[in-house]
Image 1 (tube, rainbow, N blue to C red):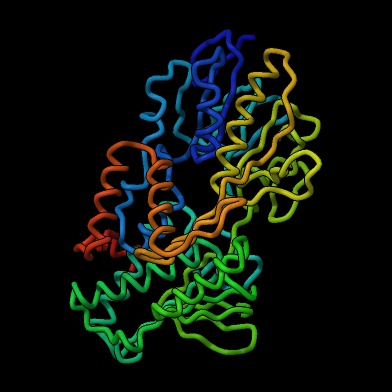
Image 2 (cartoon, rainbow, N blue to C red):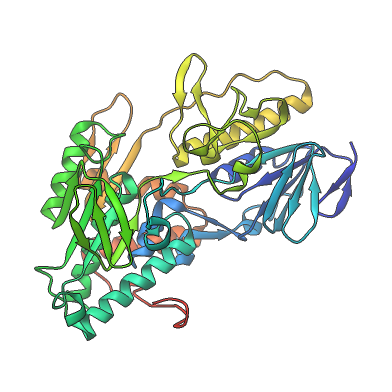
Length: 431
């Protein structure tokens, strides 16, 4: 085959991987070192470790601690190039991806690993006033807003019920639970270490969810533990509660109650609507996820692979349902897509994708977490927290990032450091 990929002539099969998240990196790693020409395209020149975004948002980590340059990751792979740009369209007829700068990249195979976006599911005002937590930009903006709010409550307590702001977190999944727990810790350290003059007895963190328990993907014992620990730390947990409206100054609940809020953090789920994958024009399932076959390709286009959050990734052959939108699915489906491409190019058959559940984890705060591994008892408390720390350090990319995060967590285990509680924002554009 001949053509161009990344601007240079090549006789190798051309693979374009769109997206530098977990799925895109896994697909590229599977293809690296093989006789294929791989171009990975992303509008950001870095990979984001999404499971730790809530710690950036609550000033526990710096943005650079959870991000790593894509070029550095594949710097020693001669068959992999990186293209910094935003893909606007995948032309299935001409086998090109079009970029926002007007250029196009031809492909023999394309892997769409474009992820998802915050899903507001038609709740009025949510898209305008709630603050999602899905990208590094989201985390940075939320951190600026939270810290600026605390400073404002210190300077003008009369604007915040006498110095007692309320923060609302919508969503009782891992992101919501982890964010609510971290918010309580941020408030605590802001009073004890920074001497902000807010009323700790009346300042509230409210966690809302429509389900009848938190962490519905976990065992009920883990859910009860998470709820008990959050309540013990001062979080106002409200279950079976829907959100009817979100405004700049609070939320209206489905039962008509009004909750004033200095910030509404949206952890209520994600949707593929509005992303590149939604423009393919192929069948889509729940949450806008692209319907794919057992080999993770689109019907009628065996050269188009959709993986990670963007695809309705099947659990496996003879197993009904789709895989959850979590990092392990992204990694496994991305790796499978890369392997499937190599097999197709060699004329080899490949077994259908099968998701292997390696367990799920969520931290409630310092020295408190739940870890659930198939066929093993639920681990919770300090042991669960240590397991959570270890797993995240293993998957975090970059020695510097691992070392920085490890030192940060070790220090926080014994005491609260000053931390990166810096408001880094343009005063004209952010609070």
